[in-house]
Image (cartoon, rainbow over all chains, first blue to last red; front, top):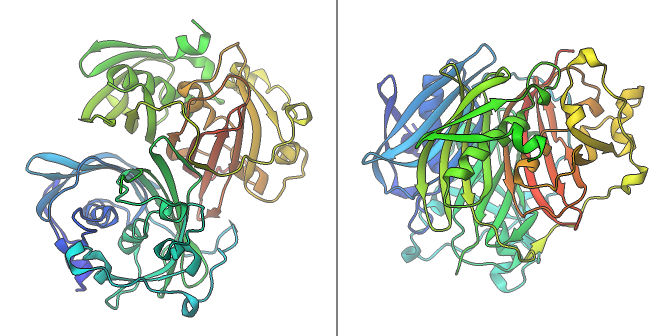
Length: 262
Length: 262
């Protein structure tokens, strides 16, 4: 079992409850990463579902849970032949921290009927790492994954932001593990906020994030391509596409988040 | 009171329940339009919230409700200074038809800090109506709103689809009413499915739709601009932006839907 599989384990307690343990290794400087929390919750939902794949997950981030024991509470809303629908909540000490509506289905292996073209990304060899975060920053998540950034989209680090909300990187787990739907849940929320390239700073808390699994990812690097359309009144959107090593669109997400005050 | 305001009325019964009446005038050939159902539900959520505007709505479409009496059931998840979060369900005869997670906040009037450019749309005078649907089709929704289509995106009607999933039109209610957040909820699901331009046909049921209100719309026509990124394995995505008459991005949505069998 990989570290990621272990950190996202969900153990069935009864018909509506799974026990989980939130791992401090997925912290982004205090709070746990939202994508990691979704992965934990989706382990419980898919285990309980007659269908294998979380094709749609809408998540509302209410509060930041602490590392340690928590529960996933499930409410089965509908179980159809094509898809099943579940409400799932991440609960700690009786309080809900993350509310979701999840649709599960069983995705086939076939080709696309129609697809947009893949994003323009330089080869991974021409992309760059970020410097390791200072140990006191509590960014333990960065040890769990490898990111190689399209250079202009980390220009903000050296005082040269592109001036547009955007972020692009290749992603894989630091340990040898092929991507799967749970890894994709982590990857849709793994990049620095797109607004850093537009000059913003500070922690940008996600309020709502919806993502769709469109195909099962091939082994290898994932290209994670993000942009925003509007920064206004303290709110911004972040739109992410994930393309796999076989050049297929495997996941789409959009989050609505608050601008940091940093 | 306009017909739309009347058809989306929600009357408070108690702390967690609103009575509503689903109007057969918003039918799309049998089922009621999903955007209309969201508008009804958001009337209850915003009435109950300390905040005025539904900034984020994630909706899971479980079943198609019948016209007539129904209830909106609310569960308050969090009420913060910046935003409040609510779970709201549309219930008929004790069964849930539509599940949502809604975030309300109070949007300001100021300009954008950063915005993508407006879409390339021909002027409204160069856009076209669709022929009135046959009365027996039950498309009563089309009497409630006016749409003027960017001509290539209705080429599918005359055997000349563009070959890409896309749909673009100006939108306003048929009765004199300025757009507001509830009208936007209708507008994000008002166009023919984007996949009609890619050669698909038949009713394309929405499984999940998340939309964000980004600014309060100015009076006048709304430009509704839709496209898709992937059609695969019976599923497609439809991404909509709505731009108001003042040239501002006021709403964003994405839905995951099933391909029709028509």
